[in-house]
Length: 70
Length: 391
Image (cartoon, rainbow over all chains, first blue to last red; front, side):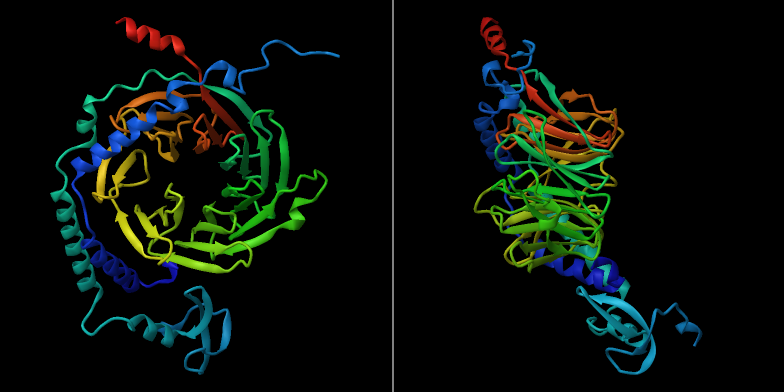
């Protein structure tokens, strides 16, 4: 666990991790943002929290007419 | 012996050198061991190559971090909100609270939706875990836990079980039965064992595996049936407070966030820390978006008027909206692409502890320290479309 490790061990762990990370493949932000935007825009039309749900499909909308006593 | 005076709980033969002396109880990779203080010192120096000192390791670490920054900065050609300038602004949302779930005796710490989009499970500081039907407000099951502060709870994908845990350092799975009279607490199955509190748990794509995060600084993947540890993830240098799985069904990665201000992306099969992001400056009062392929932060969601921290967040179904639960009792809704705040949700009377969007994206549930949960939905506004076409 991190709290049982000495400072030296923690630094060693961080160092090993950084060495691995320096060589990860990366792509430019501009291209990725474009893809992210088109992905989100594509799905946004179906997002119920953006376009809303018609009242007849909304199960939470009921209970306005009073109660039925039999 | 002045340098060797310390409170020793045990006295006996050391596990390493077998000399009888006061022993220090330590944990090596989850195993409790008893070493005499001399052996502990020797062990701390092992694993270091000749000539290494704390200072030299720190220097190397700093230079590598600088190199990483440079590599990442090379790809920073444009900001996300700049690229997003051309797209339409999100139309005014009208999200209202539709249901208030009352019944917990104390702060609600965590909640999760069931895949049937209607049931929820919530856990509270009073030690109870309640399964609700969101439409009828019915409490279907109430499970008492042996500890208070149940900080994590999760619904199984099949809807047939729940997992929860907290200060008991364990994650327990309870199968949900249809029989109301059955005592659920008796069927409890302890799956995960950590050496400190459980801060988060989630089922992977099936009921058979659980991923947990803990205050002991590690995350772990467990098999539910056997309770066996399948993979453990070491890398955080402080408590791990949250985790989330990658959304794809074939995905094998998850992200964890910790008190060491890092967000780490892990590969579940190998246990490797694949990427790490460390730009948060302190306890979080802003939300940051990181692009995994570009390996850097691309957006920050903050406002000067927001001075309280965020405790939890979730994306809407399309990813266009980001719901953040804040400690100032509100939920702020951000436009992910443009970076501005779209709307706010009020109603809670204390901190919002968890925010989750339902699996079909139609509702968002927020759990709070005011002992309630609120389920909110958007109103249908077909007449808005007509207005736009007239102008």
